[in-house]
Image (cartoon, rainbow over all chains, first blue to last red; front, side, top):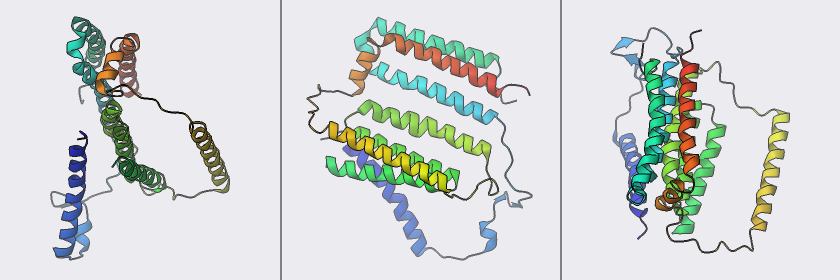
Length: 117
Length: 165
């Protein structure tokens, strides 16, 4: 059997379940249209102004750092699959790879890029 | 099962790609683009390119889309900045021309590949094991250089984002 069949089954269930739940609630649930229901609120306090503020650039920093270390982790995955075949050689080459990124991590740490303030 | 899956996934990919470009809200575009990337990952899976399937999901549908959504959040475009989607005359002309040329190119490639047999691929071709086997032996140097590239990107983003203006 194709190994992707269980994955496909999960996808189908994950798609059908929310569709079904939304359909049931829209059919069976009560509907009362009130203006206040659509208003955004925070802890019950009426919203003082428009939430379209500019966000600090730090969010972007977090996103890019996540992306870079995610790409690093992607290389660990095939390496882990053939780890036993490569032996010590594989360990050394991955150590060089990770060591390089460790230098980068120390750099961003020292620069304070991981601090929020 | 194979051809049916191909048609379903292709339809989802093309449909969501269209939805990505015709929608006005950037966040809806980002969500449909994610769907498109997932459908393409599914196409990779049907071609038994297991490694590409995983990478497509992890890196593109995961990490790159996070970046795209962060950029949408940072720009935070309101109703005033978002212009209604409209096609001016030169834009329609240029995009139509590019579309026709691309279609002609694809048709030519299809015609050229008609008589060629794909040949038998070795067992496990495109799998994680076979890709890892060549990546960590024959292509060791490019692999190590990737770490330098990643570090350069780390330094670059810190320098750009933490600059004091």
